[in-house]
Image 1: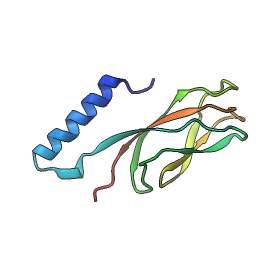
Image 2: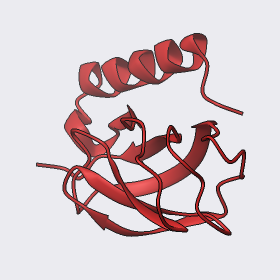
Image 3: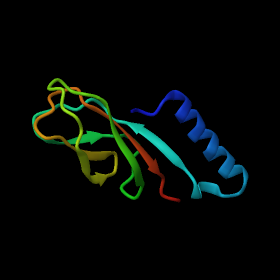
Image 4: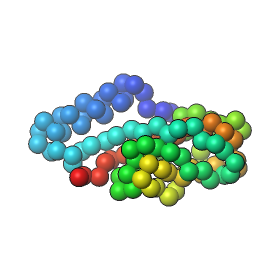
Length: 106
């Protein structure tokens, strides 16, 4: 299940409350949606603009299945603006993932 618009609203409200109470960025949960993947292999580097290598990943979910209609099995290799998605075979073009993270305090 992808995060809903209401869920994003609630996360933003929680972040604003944390800042107002003086917690700063100690509680800063962000949601990133990848660009559509190109397919071609069972593992694919997904582009997630804003994701940092030091962010703590709380959840990864497949928002859109690609052309071959395969489910996302997991993920690995987190990097700046990228995360590698893992499928059982080539998912085909068009897969989109959503990642929920606890941002690294700056």
